[in-house]
Length: 221
Image (cartoon, rainbow, N blue to C red; front, side):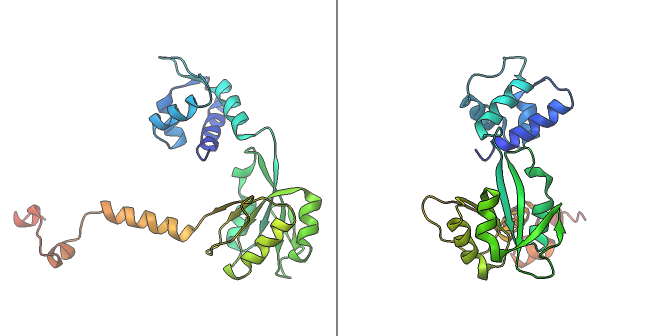
């Protein structure tokens, strides 16, 4: 499921360029996944593709969109209009993938009533009433850790059953609530670790470890 929206984005871009067929290798590269993974994923959706020809872009796009429910659109509310919240509110990647941001909330008097991404920022005082009136089904938390649990609880009480959290705190929700958490610091730390694993050791580090590279022994600079 996490990869299907990537396939939709790649297929839509191809369709806009007039591409009619695509190989599994080409679609895998465009979707940033392995070709074997892509073929396995698509086989779960039915029989697609012709050996030596590839996949029909339009037909495959329709089928994958059906699987992720792109024919329906779920209303989203973003809570917290700091730098991250504003970036999320202005993110154009939500459009066309079965979600749309319809409400923005904050507690800062200087932000409430202002315009962000074409929407008027609302006060969290009226959170439950506004969530119900707008039919919000997905809540996005881009707030500090301290108020996060209370705001999450209020979203759930208002009927929201899907929450995307960018909060560096473990939130507690009922079993019937879908909670997905994204820790940007952890993601960056993972990338930094992987970079460190493949980066060549500096000469000073080699000396400290008691090793000398063959190039150094040969006097090659």
